[in-house]
Every structure is written in C-alpha cells, then in structure tokens.
Image (tube, rainbow, N blue to C red; front, side, top):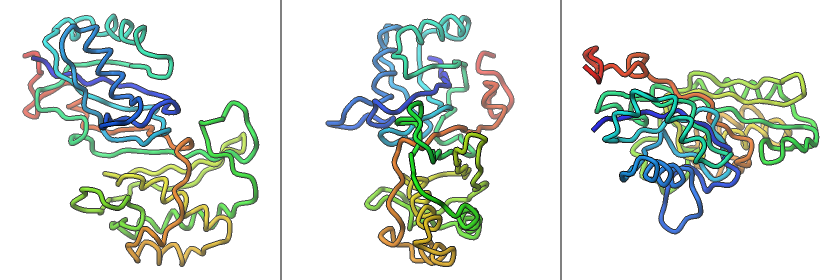
Length: 264
C-alpha cells in the first residue's frame, strides 16, 4: 500500500464545502472519492489538508489517499491527465506524488495562506468569485486593523461557536490589504492554523472598520472580548480562496523523516 499526495484546485461555487458530512449536498471530497475509486478500481477515501466552507475556493489544496496502484508512482503525469478527464470542469488536479506512509496533508502542514477578494465595481466575470461591495472604504484603517492581529494569539472572537477545538490560539505570520491595478481589494493572511470561519469573520469585522462603524481600537477590544457576538458578520464565502499550503520540503520530495525515500 502506497500513500500519495495530490495537489488540486477547485471553484467552490457548486459545492457544499470540501468535507463530506451526513445529509449534506455535493462536496469536493465526495467527487474525488467517487472518481478515484472508480478509476483505480479500489475503495479510495481522501483526506484533505483542511475544510473549506460552502462556496469557498482553493487555488492550492492538498489531499492524500492510500492505494495498491504502484503505477500511480511510475506514470503520474498520465494518471493526472486521466483523473482530470473524469473530473468536472470546476475541479483540477495539478500533480500526484508518493510520500512516506506517515505523511498527513492536514497535520504536516506548517502554514496556510488565504486571500479574500473585494470588487468595488460590478464585474460579470467576478460573479461568485469576489465580494462586490459598493461604497467607500478607509483602507488605511483596515490596514491598521490587520496589523493588530499580530498582537494576539487567541482568536475566539472570530471562531465558530460549538466546535470541538481544544484551543483557539493561532500564530499569524502575515496579514495585509493590497489593491490591484483593476481596483480589486485583496486581504492576504497566513498562519500556522485557522479556526473554522475565522478568515471570513476577520474580514467582516475589518469591513466595519473600513466603513467607519468601528475604530481600530474597537477592533482590539473585539479580539480581547473573546466573544463571537462582538465581531462583525462573516464576509460572504465567494470572495475567499485558499491559495497556499506549506509543508517541509523533504515531505514534498517524498522523503521519510530520516531522509529515506518511500520507494527505497
């Protein structure tokens, strides 16, 4: 039995998030499980590097699964082509590669990066791909609020309630607002881990700052309150993208923790 990582991307518009759940609509995980099981002619169950909510997109996402097919290792490009032919147009696999048997896409990830896109003009090509927001925003104050995030590690105020989290602590590595040439406003945030709904809750609260409905000092108080009801509404899912999942280079090269190849 060989463990494989797959790197993929998807448009989350049509899906009820990544993870299969009881009595839910279509998910990305479900589509992959069905496709891989059929083409590999064996039961396949993929594990994802995280959960994306309904309507959230991913330009870089990793999953792993175990298979008896050694041909996946020897003819990876051919299998990527074959998998992509069987997948719907809104899911694409970029590569597949063998890893050691203990490798785990979720627990071995060292950081994740998300981007949130806000369009300030009506754009038919951004429908369900960005938040369309009319009106002025004080981006300077939003940038100041983003920098406040580095002062804290407990983000209970931006966490979904009634979850099984043992801790709401996260370490923020990057948080900034930028404006692209076409006027698109982009929030980029990287951390060692994220709580469910955390990025959308942060963006929704910073938009209150940008609209003048809350100050930067209010933003600090919201974080310190550790109370989700004090924060703003979650920004719509359509503007959120998982864009980067970081791993130790040795893992991506398929090496054991002691430096051995999984094929040795």
